[in-house]
Amino acid sequence: MNQVKTNYEKWYEECDGYYWGLEPAELCYEIEKIIPADKDIKVLDIGCGEGKDAVYFAKKGYKVSAFDITESGIRKTKALAQKEGVEIDAFVADINDMNINDEFDIIYSTGTIQYLEEDKKDIFFEKVKKMTRAGGINWFNVFVDKPFLPLPPDWDETEAMWNTGDLFSHYKDWMFLRSDEIIFDCNSSGVPHKHCMDVVIAKKVQ
Image 1 (cartoon, rainbow, N blue to C red):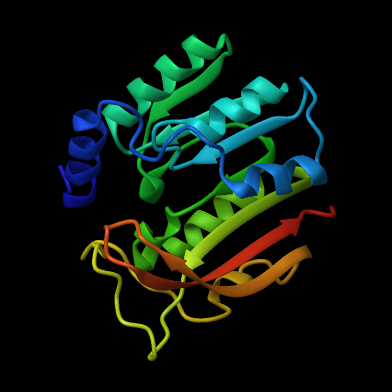
Image 2 (cartoon, rainbow, N blue to C red):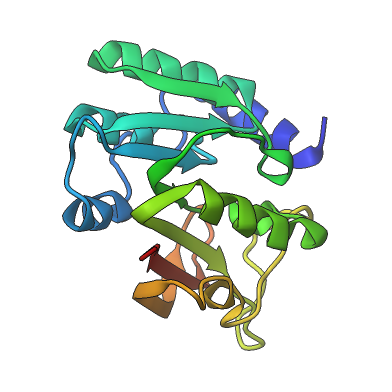
């Protein structure tokens, strides 16, 4: 079992409630405006953690699939879905070797693709772009290296900073709905720090 899986298994298992809380990420509202909910709209949440965003989309009426590397995260995802009275296809998988034979209108991931191994990046984006239906979108973010920002105190050795613009380069043949870089404050470890992040929303036109 790799170190990142061990860490998150432990955090999710030991947390009495939900480690990341139950409020959906801001990206959910952004995506919802671009492609409104419908029972035929299929969503894939990559690295769903304990499932708060996946459950939000399911409650809104999307058809949702979600995976995470942790068994405890998927157990909590399924429990939350059951509590909220929605169905989610939730399963354990690793972003580095995912094998999904399906197509989706929305594929997204937050706080996960920094765990992509260097030699798997191109393969990963080829897969998700192929899995996206025409007119569908991909929403991704990634932490970016800046010499004036120290590594966050809770940074894991299995994570990898990206360079500015690397994420955007994977979508040069798609329509950009958003492509920006932000620096924001964070207190995830109990120690105030800053992150730099690139965010992309890209649409598959054909």
